[in-house]
Length: 264
Ligand code: ADP
Ligand code: MG
Image (cartoon, rainbow, N blue to C red; front, side, top):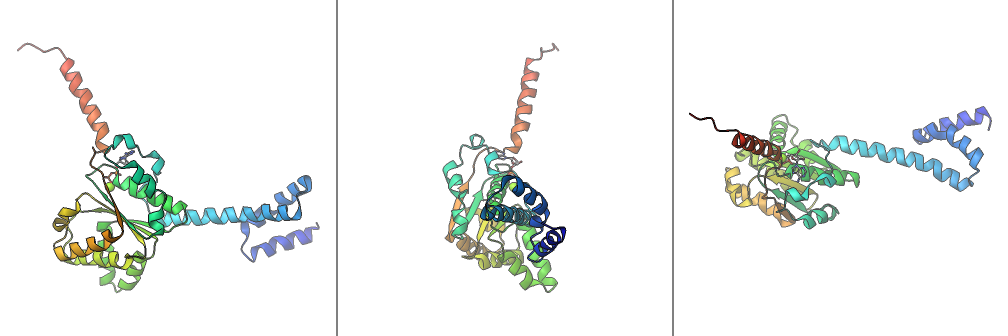
């Protein structure tokens, strides 16, 4: 191939935005001269380079957009540490069928039992499967929504919350939600109802949601929409965060007990 034709080819590949292909062109041509693939195979190999590069770029974009606090995969979840958790249910959730069905997931349990990890890890799976996911805390969601109402960006913000296939709302219940905040949360949940999944984590059993929200009518309305198509995962076990502390405390106690008693 003459230099001229090669250059023209590279430039033409930039038109339909095939930069990875243009990048690989020289190497691919050289390899083809040695391996002599069929025309079809040559083109297929060349195009798959571009497809892979595009997929990687999109995945990186979705990952950045998702704003997960951590990127621990579900495979690192230690089920033995949480015997109360229904492992088969988690594995069923990991198939992501609930997202295709636009159903919700409620993770309920005390602090440190892995709610954020499970919510993010399922979200991460969804991102890898091609879904758009967004992680936020409940406090952040209502603060941003209130700000947007004041600044005249209500509709834009509401569209934003409705957009992703999965909205992870973490840590509901740590802070009380006075009337207006509860109403904002209700409107976000309402907009997503039957359009996209919500993964919500809370330290409060649903029976005590009245204590989170000032307004029990709003609490009931939020629950109604959330639970209509929902899986509930209750985690009652010990805090994973405290395991290290407990082990150290135990060592300390044993060391103290082993020390010879000093006579008074
Ligand atoms: P929660 O959101 O329920 O308060 P987190 O998900 O933040 O708890 O968990 C606290 C820490 O412990 C995190 O670093 C998390 O990855 C880890 N962790 C919790 N449970 C498990 C578990 N079963 N297996 C592995 N790591 C866990
Ligand atoms: Mg958490």
